[in-house]
Length: 345
Image (cartoon, rainbow, N blue to C red; front, side, top):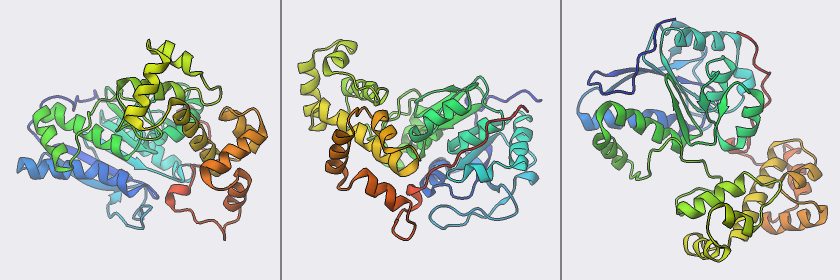
C-alpha cells in the first residue's frame, strides 16, 4: 500500500478527484460534492479541482430525481488523489464484492476517500473506516454504530481523519468540501466560495447534527438539544438538563422562547414524536416498541400525542406504508435496507 498523500495542506496544483455516484443517491448530496468544486474553479479562474464521474458498473447511475450521471466504471479508474463516494438508498444491493474490492484497490494507492450520506456505509463495509472516526446521516447513526463496532461512530456533521472523510448529508457535505478548499487555498478563498452559495455557517467538523435543523440555536439551546436527542427513550427532566448545562431551568426556558419560540418541554416532545414517525414509517418495530423507544410508557398517551402531532394515528400511518397503492412516498420516504455484517477482508 502506498503512503497516503496529505491533500489537506496548501497546494496550488489542481486536486485530481473522482466522484463515484451510486444509483438512488440524492441529487442535493451529489450537487453538494460537485458544485463547490465548480465554484472554486470559477472563482479562481483556473482549475482548482480536476474531476471525473465514476459509476459502479457500465450502467449510468440514476439519482433519486431521475437524472442520469454519465461516467466510466470504477474498474477503469487508475488513480486519483481524492475519491468522493456519493450514495443514498438500496445500499445492500449496491455493496457488491466488485464495488467493495474497487474501493479497497483505490484506497491501497494512498488515495483519500470521502463518503457522503450513504457513502460512509460502503466505506465501512469495504473495511476502510476501521479505527477512524466517522459519521453518517443521523437517521442511521445507531444502526451504523451497531453494524460497524470497529468504527468510531460520531454524531458530527462531518469527520476528518487522515485520509478518510465522512459527511452526514448534503449540507454537511458542502461544509466538508469548504474545509478541503480552506486547507488547500486558505480560509479567505473558502469564504468567498461559500458566499457564492449564500452559505454563512461555520465549517466545523465536530458541530453535531440536529434532527430539526440548528440555524436558530444559540450555544445553550444547541447543547440542550443534543442532550435531548441522546435521550429520546428516557426523557430527561428540565431540571436535569439545566444542571448538566450549568444553568437554571428558568434561564433555559427563556432561551428556548427567545431563540426557538417554544418551551424546552415542547421542543423535546417534538423531537420524540418526529423520531416516532420515522420509526413507524421506516422500521418494522411494533407500535409498542416505537412508543418505548421515544419515551412513552403508556400506549394511550403515545397514540394521543402521535395523532395530535401528525394528524393521523401511528397505526394508520403504518397501514399506509404497507399498502403501496395508497402510499405516496418520494425518494425521501425510502429507508435503507439492512446490509450484511462486514466480513473480514
